[in-house]
Image 1 (cartoon, rainbow, N blue to C red):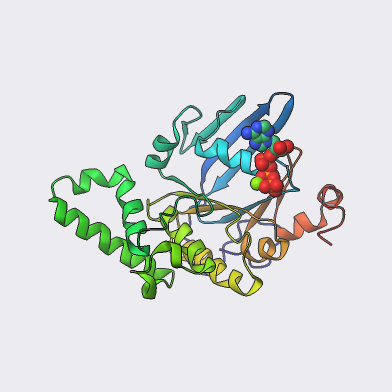
Image 2: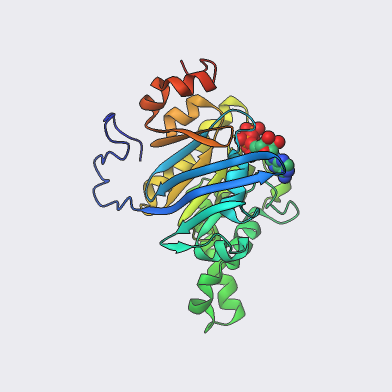
Length: 274
Ligand SMILES: Nc1ncnc2c1ncn2[C@@H]1O[C@H](COP(=O)(O)OP(=O)(O)OP(=O)(O)O)[C@@H](O)[C@H]1O
Ligand SMILES: [Mg+2]
């Protein structure tokens, strides 16, 4: 849901968005991570809302990936709390968070190259325990069929229907990225964390991957999407709200216009946003 030109309101409700709840689904309070003497994430308070795309930007070493690692449970914070749907989840394991609906793309590392595209998504769809109550009355064959159908549907939605039976290792780079996002999405997440989904891609490949993310945002009204992104053109185009990290601290938060005009942000980027 891209903000349609109301600078006062970063969650402006355009046509078709009236029913979006936009409630905060996940928030951090004073979240801090120290590596020895280095404070990589420093007292960060951020809230992520359903139905919108939030971009996290910041110079190299700002703490963006560390922040995602704290959210997904790969790292334990030194201080602060993470609250998901009203519950403190600061000490839950990555698996427990994933079961609760927090999904993260891992820049290709979660793809099994020897499996087909379809198998990769089916395996991801099966991994979400939430489904087990629904499926535990079914036979293995039925379960397998249901997850395969779900994987087919998801892959059609991202335009990978021609690639069902291609080994993931043989996909083009753009298609592997789409698969990466689809795998994260196959777990039925309520919040999707994407770390530089277009990193290393050729300019002409980027729009395809962006449209996958934009379609998810359009079709899944309750889904919160958070992406770390370096390319400012992409950030300005795709995100409803932007959060800037610098030296581990939250420097600013707002619409693309507000962020572009923010002097502290301009200083942190040495004018790169002008
Ligand atoms: N496991 C670790 N041990 C020690 N220091 C770390 C570790 N992970 C990250 N750091 C340091 O923490 C700081 C933040 O790193 P992080 O990777 O989170 O930044 P980033 O904003 O994602 O940067 P980039 O834009 O380059 O991806 C950096 O100074 C980095 O060197
Ligand atoms: Mg990073």
